[in-house]
Image (tube, rainbow, N blue to C red):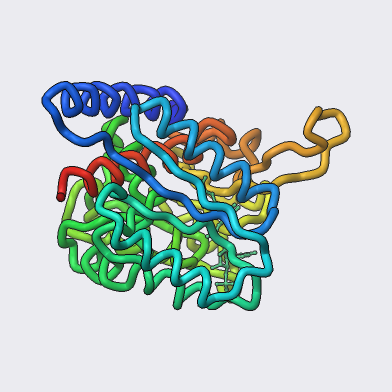
Length: 290
Ligand code: NAP
């Protein structure tokens, strides 16, 4: 069994980006600039945004964080997005999700200019991705593909079972893994909360991507020997022994699954760091596209 080490892989990619930025700036080019918008005080969202800011600093990007209270109106938020769309110094713009209930997330995503949509959530970019055209691929799916590629995991002709159909993880992954590409070229099954007898599908899988947000859902007796396992889940579970008061749990029961797996991502240190570095890749691409 091989650990798909997202931490080490993302560190390597970060160093490559940092080198590219250094050369770009030395040649008189502009330093890439990522802007993040954070609404409200959700603890996990604050952590994600500060991790993204830290990654920007590590690769030599400029980053700006705009924070707004949870009470901000949708109109005010969209006005800010439009202002940033017009700011030529900004290459990438992300709005940390989820947003408060009174704000329509689709309207907010639609307001981001597709050329700055480094999260790859705008319908125009989603459409391009689905057709296999060059675009910003959402960070988590991109990071997973890159990790499989870095480890030379064979995907062509394999049966990939994805658990979860969200717009940011499961659905784009299903599209990408089914494209005639490498990684990709898989036969894909998507499971969700209405799927009956999920283990019928997971036992037939060569690759399982668990993205449902249910700690330790996938158990060893649900998979076959030699399966490639990608664990996207990150759930904060209360843990009094930790300084933070919680620990992070994946969607895979690592102890029972790992001995049967050929490759497996750990939590933490697997998909999480790959997601953040993929946002850096997209931001660099946005800056290059200017
Ligand atoms: P989400 O929007 O809540 O979607 C979860 C999906 O899983 C839904 O499609 C849901 O089905 C399905 N599901 C829920 N319970 C299920 C069950 N018991 N059996 C089968 N399917 C089930 O979640 P998400 O945003 O995709 O995130 C999924 C997990 O990945 C979360 O733990 C999240 O924190 C984590 N995540 C990690 C990263 C990273 O960088 N590592 C990035 C993004 C997300 P329905 O559609 O029927 O409701």
